[in-house]
Picture 1 (tube, rainbow, N blue to C red):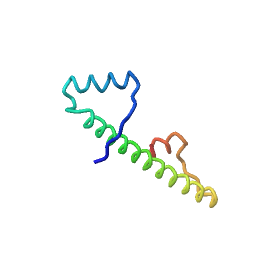
Picture 2 (cartoon, rainbow, N blue to C red):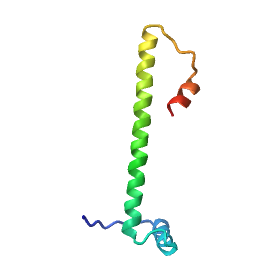
Picture 3 (spheres, rainbow, N blue to C red):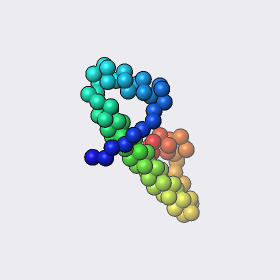
Picture 4 (cartoon, helix red, strand yellow):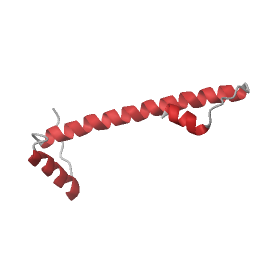
Length: 82
């Protein structure tokens, strides 16, 4: 495993201390590892949403070019994709 030294804001350091004190995590290493897992999931989810939106836009461009328009409005399309 790699070792990293990080600087935290006072607020974040207090949060880590509070989580450790409450027993939510057994170490700051465990807390940071969980935070990284959650960040990776969030980024993957955002990437999947962006890919789905791009696919919808690409389809819309093809439909518009061929004058095959959807009956959905922008909000309905966004609700479907997001």
